[in-house]
Length: 168
Image 1: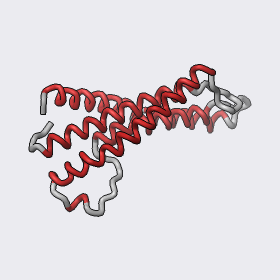
Image 2: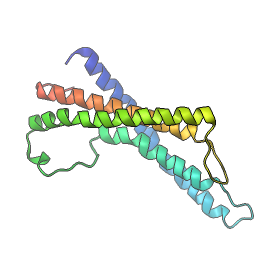
Image 3: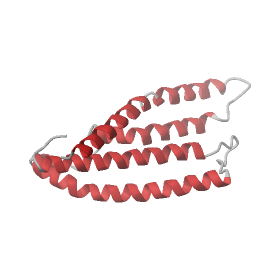
């Protein structure tokens, strides 16, 4: 594989690895928010922000963890025939099927960017008592889908290299 493609794959996987490792700690943030939610219910000052904050942290956790999960190949796969195939056949099937994933991610990214632009333009807020702005979590979702798209392209290049008998 050409040097720029190898550099692209290494760069994308390094970024997704670091983002994924940092994202793992959001679970502790969410646990702290939920513990505070529980504790605040027995005080005279109940918190109205805890449920939505926990939801936003959870969305960031699984959205930003998606590219890392894909990179580690820990995603769920329909494995009726796949495990019986040779690595070369798997690479051919993966290189072909990644186009469906790329199409899906492009449509998802387009919708996420449109929704984020709307949220920024009109100051969209949640319809709850706390009424937080929605654009921060929508930006996180856009970044996560973009990183997933980059990781899917890196997987395509890895599969093409495997078909050619090379490793990246």
